[in-house]
Length: 454
Image (cartoon, rainbow, N blue to C red; front, side, top):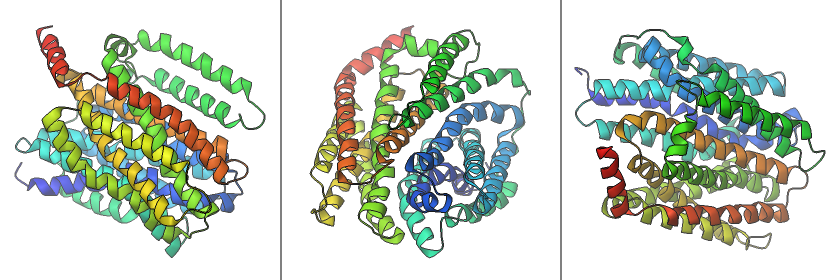
C-alpha cells in the first residue's frame, strides 16, 4: 500500500467505533427517554434490545455483501445509513420511530467492521496483527467509555446529543474513505448466498423470547413463548439444510469446546451488561446523580478494564487463555457478591470499588475469550467463528436488557438491584465452571495438533 497504513487504520477506525459507541451511549439516555416518551423501563429496554438484534442479524450478512459489492462501497453505504439514522432520531415523533432509527443504526454500523477488516487484510501485509489490534482498541474503548461520553453530552444538551455526536465521526470517516480506502474489486453478486430465511426466523425467535421475558412481571404472554419455541425449532431444521447457513449449527455440534466458549461468552456479557446498563439507572433514578456525574462515575467500570487488559495479554502469552479466564470469572463473581452489600447507607467510594472489580473482570475476560476461541478453531474457520462469537455477545446483551426490564419495571430500589445481583451470581457459577472446564495450554496444543493432522 502506497499510502501510510496509519491513515487507512484511522479512516476505518472512525467508522468501526460507531457500532459499539451507539450500543453503549444509550445507557445514560434511558432515563431521559423514559420521561420523553412516557415509557416503562421494559419499553425503554427495547432501545437496547433492538440494536443488538439487528446487529446480530446484520454482521454475518455484511461480510458476504462486502465480498459481493466491494468493501469500500459497503463501508461508505454503512456510513450513509448511520448518518441518516443519527439525523432522523433527534426528531422522532414517537417511540416506534426512534426504535426504527436504532435498528437502522445497527444495520449501517454493522457494515463497517467486516468491510473494514477485509480492506485491512488485503492492504496491510506488514504489521497486519498490530493494525487489527489497533482497530480492536477503537471498538473496545468506544464501547467502554460510551456511558461517560453520553453522560457529558446529555448534561450539555439533551438525549438528542447522543445521536448528533455521530455526525463528526461519520463526515471525517466518509471524506477520508473517498481518498484513502482502496478500490478493491467487487465479486459476483449472489444474493442467494444470503440466508434471508434464517435471519427472519432468528429475529422472530428473539422478539418472541424478549416479549415473553418482559411479560413475566405482569400478564404473561404465552403466545410469545409459543412463537419463540416454534420459530426456534423451524430455525434449527431450516439451518441444518442450508449450504451457507446464518448460524452453522452442524459445526457447533461437532466442536464442543467452541460451543462452550460461546455459552461462556454469552453468560459473561449477560452479567456484565446488566451492570453496564443497570448502574446508570441506579445512579440517575435511585441515587439522583445528574448525567454528567453519572458519566464520571461510570469511568470506574470502564477504566479498570482498560488498565488490566495489557496484563491479561501478558498472562495469555505466558500461560494460555485459561488462567486469565479463571481470574476474570473470579473478579466477576466477587464483584457481583460485593454488590449485595451495597445499600442506601453505603458511601460512593464503596460503589466505585465494586465497579472497579467488575471492570477488571471485563478486562481479563474480553481478550481471553477471543484467544480461547482461536485456540479451538482452524485458521480457515476464523471468519465464521468470529461472527458467531459476536452473535453470542449480542445474545448476552439482549438477555441482560430483558432481565433489567423484568426487574426494574415497577419500583426502582436497592431490593430490586440486589435481585438482579442474585440472578447474576447464579450465572457467575456457570461462568466459573466453564472457565475451569476449558482445556489448559498443554491440552490445547494436543487438540491443535490433532486438527492439523485431520
